[in-house]
Length: 88
Image (cartoon, rainbow, N blue to C red; front, side):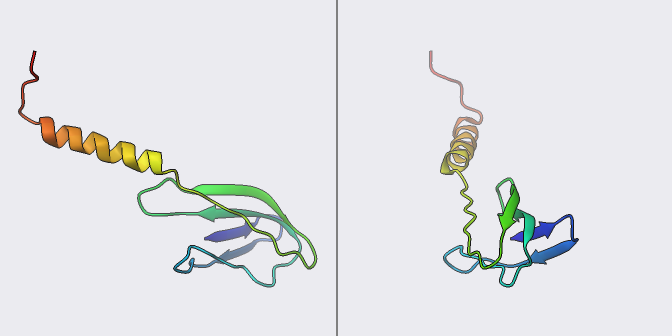
């Protein structure tokens, strides 16, 4: 996880825990961009996340299972059908 405040130049990185939770403690107030990256998936960014005094907020990300399933199905077709002539 990466957190950036482009106005103040603040840049922080953390690794999620085993339950995919993360925390950026003691942030100054401002607007931040939060980025997540996971191997095999496209990175995601949530922009202009506002942090106020005393705030504890959640920014959730999800990686769609459909895109992973679709990739595996395509790979399976390519392997199964290699060198095979389709039946008429």
